[in-house]
Every structure is written in C-alpha cells, then in structure tokens.
Length: 211
Image (tube, rainbow, N blue to C red; front, top):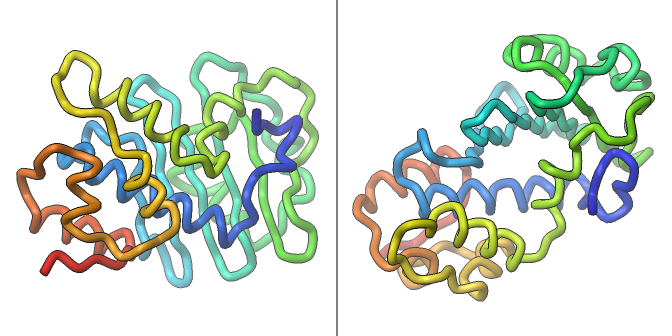
C-alpha cells in the first residue's frame, strides 16, 4: 500500500495530475451533486496552480497542489494525532510554503505531507509515527482503474440498483481520453444534467465531446 513509509509506487507529479483529474471527472459523473463527491479538481486554483480536493464527509481531507515545479500532498485524518508540522514538512521547498502554511490547509490540519519535484522525486519530512493513516487516503493513486471502480460501486452503488461501473470506461478516463457520452454511460446508467457535467469538465480542465 502507498503510504509515507513506502511511496515508491506513487506516480510522479505529471502522472498524478492526470490521475487526479480522472478521479474528479469520475466523481462528477457519479454524483452531479458536488456535496456528495469525494474528489474535485480546480484547474484554476491560483496563478499557475491547480489543485485536487478530497473530502469524505466524515472529517478526513486531502489537498494536492500542482505547480510547474511539482506537487505537494497535504493529508488530514481526524482520528489521528497531528504531528509537529515543522517536522513532517522539514525540507519542503519554499514555493510550497504559501499552500501548506496558508489557508485552507492551515485550518484543516496536517497529519502527513509528501512532495514531488523533478530533481528529487517524492520526499517527506520527519515521520515519527509510522501509523499516520496515509495509506487510507493514498491507496487510490495506485493507477488501477479497478481500485476506483470497486470503491465507487460500494460508495455510490450502496442501497441503489445502479449497474456496476464499466472498468474499461474508467480506464479510458484514467488514460485521459476525450470524454464522450458513450464513456459517461459506461459509468452511470443515465445522466440527468449534461450541461452541469460540461461545466464541471471545464472547471477540471478535461477534454470532452458530447456531439
């Protein structure tokens, strides 16, 4: 499992960015009500910055910032003690400081932190507690479409009669292929609001063609 103890299989920043956009697209299809989504993506978070937001509705949150220099992951799990933030961020490049030590991250909290740069790959600060819960949030980044499909079938399909996700459709989105109505209908049986999905895709910065 991917964690702060073993992040050797965590995708590099460009690949993780593509995967984060895919997760946001999939959630936008699965839940047109933003309130019930786990993953959302803002392609215009700031000047030259994009970000993934993950919320589970029970207090756990993850924010990932993408810049030209790389990316940084801030994870917060409400059932775990927060470590000394100066230690888990030791060695963090200064260009990530405004994000990690500013808002909303500062108010959310930090249970773990990792960052990636082209020159040094993935790094983390001092991790004193091996059981920091990081694998609970990072497992989704294994790059396997079945991982998302299994999770979504349970989360979105529980107590409903919706069909299981088509893993091939999930894989197409993981590869960044232009989203079509056919792919969308491999994720859900029907979509209520196509204009809303188009708006979400523009916010994510993901290509689509519904003609």
